Amino acid sequence: MQIRRAILDDTQTISKLFRSRIDRWQRMDSQQRVEDLAYDDLSIYERWLHGGAWMSIETGAIWLSHLLSGAGNPFVLENDSDEIVGYVETYSSDEPAPYGYHLHIGRMATKNNSDAEKDALMQFLLEQAGGIGRITVSCTAYDNDSINFYKRYGMSAIDTVQQVSIPTVGGSVGFYKVTDHPQADIAQIANWSMPIGRIENAPYHWQHLWHNLWQAVPQIVARRTNRQHFNAGGQEALVCVQQHLYNPRSADIYCWTAKSLTAQVVNAIRDWAHKEGYRTLTMTVTEKIVLLLGSNIEKTPYQHTILSRDV
Image (cartoon, rainbow, N blue to C red; front, side, top):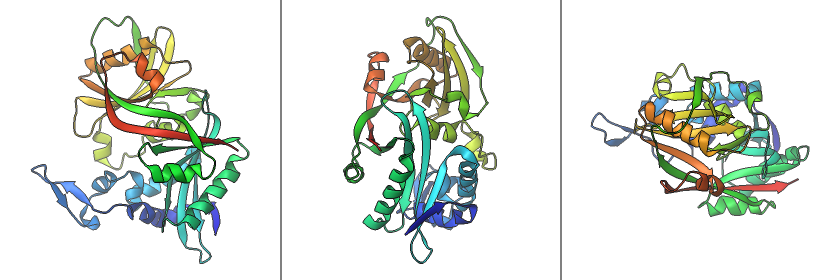
């Protein structure tokens, strides 16, 4: 097998790798009931809802073009017949402890889910990480098969992130300033941490959230997404607030900071969101940040384990 950098001509095959994971294609009908449909009967947006950009050739091409422009590093795995049988995206980042300078494994898919395909990709990724010094990956905490696979390559858990639900609170939070921040240059978050919303790594989420890539898909654009610069108590933070798909009064929070997160920033986010009409915020955080949020939170079953290995 051989591995090479992906090109735009690979879009259709890469999309097939990810779509093969979907057992059933569905959508909501006019009475909000779930109905099964053939893939070809779904709109681009309805396909998107099953797993993001790689669910169709059209959005996959936009995403791959974005990666190839410098947003990430996409690679394909070919067998001896030059057939693409695997794909992986990586994102390099330098973040505060416990992550440090590292290469992160983003989305990965193989055609046959065979050990040979996955091992070929992992050997390549370890070689790529050799010039950086560390490799990381994120797995659902309950996905024992994936966790055990990465442990076979010497990776071990270094952190766990927990999703929590927290109410917004209006008033009595002190002075803070919020401005729209559309600038998408990733250099802005160099060496910054991502204390809220970090499931993969900081550049991965930045590339997915901060760029306006989907203007050709009006349903994606219609989903309310605010990209803001906060200044609270002398601390700066870049915050993305993304409205929930099926609950317009709830939103997901993603936050990047140059310094350790403070209660002033958290309270400013809660107050601003309350004024914007939100009543519940979803945050994915480490246990250390959970303690910072106070007692009025609700933990969900959603957890991820971050694994790492020095190379």
